[in-house]
Image 1: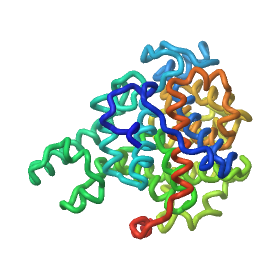
Image 2: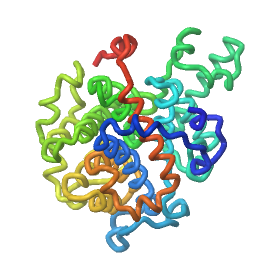
Image 3: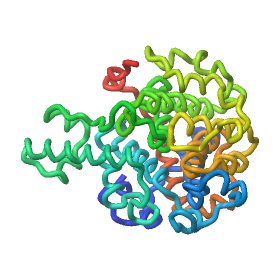
Amino acid sequence: MEFLSFDDRRLPHEMQLFHPSPLELSIDRDKLNRFMGSMVGLAVGDALGASSEFRPHEYLVRNPIVDMIGGGTWGLPAGHWTDDTSMALCLASSLITMKIYDPYNQMVRYKRWYQQGYLSSVGRCFDIGNAIKQSLNIFQSRQNQFAYRLRFNERQLDQFSWKQIQGYGEFDVNCSSEGVAGNGALMRLAPIPLFFYRYPQLAIEYAGRSARLTHGDRKAIDACRFYAALILSALHGHPKHFILRPDFYDSHRKLFGRMDLHPEILQIARGSYQRKIGYEGGIRGSGYVVQALEAALWAFYTTNSFEQGALAAVNLGDDTDTTAAIYGQLAGAFYGCNQIDSKWKDKLYARQLIVCMSQWLFTLANKYKMTTDDQSTIYY
């Protein structure tokens, strides 16, 4: 997919689109609608919260967000998105281009976004979390050391696949450590469960592995594993009471392998958010992955439409764009793209690119066959 090349310096709305054939997209229209809903929902949530990012809850009580507007924290036009969507599109573009889970290629694309604005809504990286910035700097340093030893340059190494890199020697692609438990991996998660939806155990494992690249704490890893399972359930059209039942994890325990969820994530999986009454009851839209997961699930649980939940997530305050982006991945898969307010979709920057990438994820997911390499990775 040349239009997803990480050397492309064009802005997302300028990229030439090549959609899958109508025949491929007619396999399961309901599931396609849910695929598009998850990706568009992520971006809509991100754009909705972009104007109020870092605003405290008290400010939003007095000045609640009721629509998608511009300005605010980053001075973006209405509908433009931040790092959440950029990183999700980097992840999606890697899966679509490589047609496999390639952690090295993912990190190269994240690095190109950070340094050159690849898949940014404004052509540059203007918003990046400290954990991700640190992990990408570590990744580049490891690349440079590897390149020096092999007498390559960094740009040459960027073109390699994970399998090719492994052929030249040991390279640690996990660039984080224990204690790094922000929400930056959860916010970009959706492409993983979408691409591997036919293999739920693999989808859950790769969700954890994709988190570990930049967020090494087990809470961040397990938040992504659990949320991937919920997105999978929504993609299959399960009702909300089934997706959010307190015994969901216990009923699907075999999909998570040998490693139990971290106790703090397990508490959420068993319904902690269902016993809390919003902000006053302890729900927080913070950058801490445990609170971010709980806030997104609370917004989904307590509302009956995509729009209600997205606004509830944003108006918690603080990390507004990311809380809503996390919510949007699950809610979009549950409600489907058709049930996301058209006025928000119409404002969404580069919507056609996001829809196109969703369609490619759907098409390739239905063609994907588990390989021996996949089977050998399952160790949880």
